[in-house]
Image: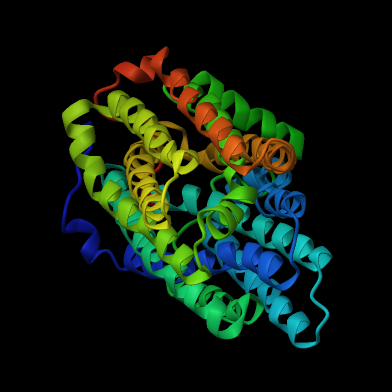
Length: 425
């Protein structure tokens, strides 16, 4: 089976359009929240680098715990309901931050707790969303669907951080996060409107324990030679990338000399790059093949990120280098993430998609916690610029997992296992 990017089929698919709308709205809110936690800590509480590392670990690490339990739950539950519940939970959790700030009681402990819980809900949403899309649209439309979702996610990356930076200056970071809460609520309303045709893929009486679900997910990933190398690549990418999480804002604001608004524009350049990457991905995949797209995208991603620790000279030059890194890095990262995601959704059995995604969340969560904590400590010890350079070196090594695997020779996504089509669910 050949995979193409049809240009009109999904425009006539009401269920996909509503899912697309929900993700578009929540993507804007997620960008405000992502910057909001760190900026609230830096600008309101004046957090130290090690505290930012701990905050990043709490925000991005819940996948380690949630992934163990969520995969089996998602595979035995209507995925749309799981996504709605996650959106509503994030709505209420985010509301506690401006409420505490209004009372003058906002602390790092609260930011840690809310970041962890919102991160857990986001991981649950991601696992359910990943497993839900193949049951909503036909297999041959997966590349098209993932590309469309990535395009609007990129637009949110363009507008969200720039909007966040402006809101943080006008209203302060804690109060700006009211907008995040509203977007998650709107997302839940759109998901309510998605046709509820999906049924659990396992019989209600068939229950596995959480550790059995983890083994099932891991075995499914390791048994597929085209997916197996992506697990190792994900772990190294995530661990090295997590070095950036606690240090990037500090580096941009204090060493490069950007204002919060300019930092928001800088991050928005990543969204412009991601939009370019979403549009470029199909061309790269058709020209180079899946494997070479992953390799080229991975190495180019690292090459552009190298501009961050190398940024020097006048303020305008340092700022320009940061923006070029954001644009090029996000462009080539998304260019290979789209076919990799579609590959996993297409060739892994639908009945274990939740558990396989949960396995990746466990791996990424553990790598994130380790990377964020180590990055924060190294930032204090070696310095911010030197630690960011180490992160780039780790990211540059990650594509080697694919280079020495069958995936490197893959031209196009093959047909997956024979399971139920979306119209039969």
